[in-house]
Length: 330
Image 1 (cartoon, rainbow, N blue to C red):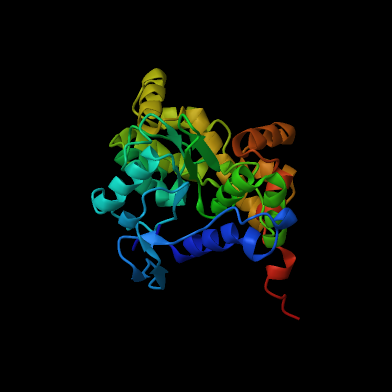
Image 2: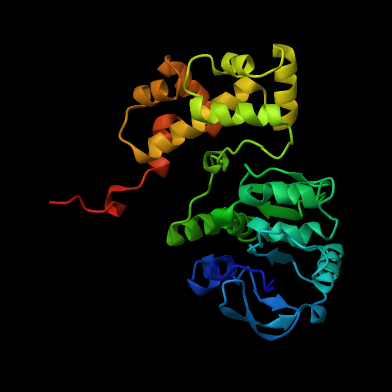
């Protein structure tokens, strides 16, 4: 589906990869192409997408009575967030397609439009982690999981959402495997060098403590610990610096931020460790000490439990490769 908010990269990428079994001769024994794909929208002809690049809409949605799959690509949302009610015709058509048996799929922020149908109410879904708070506020009836790559829901497994940005790769490989078989999906992944995000999206999440709670006492503690989380006993120091008793401070801190004080400190420490792993050559033991943990083995267990990767695996995954680094001055 093409609409003015859509990102050209996701729309065109999905189109090309799902067409590839036929275009690249990947089907076995001259089997027919598994998909016949069209770009649809509210009007036929050129449509300028969010990046300013036009794409050609091939069919008007109102002329389509049934479809096996409908995919809403990623969209670029303005700072004000998603504005429901802008596309009533598309939303009504999506509902009709679902009634006729279609899978409704979203890439990244495309789930904002799908959620407007009401079909995701009471269901699990995923979205780009950068849009998760906005989505939760806009559609509180949908259980959102930004750490998950792909969420498949509905009584027929017909409500499919993929998470942040390039996890549309997982969406198209899933659809190819479901409709054309696992061997074809594996060959497509090989030809395009696509990878399943099997560890999930947790390693990509960046922790940002909630600060819009309106509790000045807690906010002051957050600001202090943001600069001093590596010190010994930071929770005790936050309590000492506050005007509250220990039990009151912990209760108010948890209520305001959604995390206990010690869990908040842990997240700050792990986030700092992630940056050090990405940007420095320091050993894991040194980084453990720098962020506040004398026991490096304990830090390693904590890091994996929080991110889903060991510190060494995280560094291999996210560090800039040697060939992409600027040359050193001679």
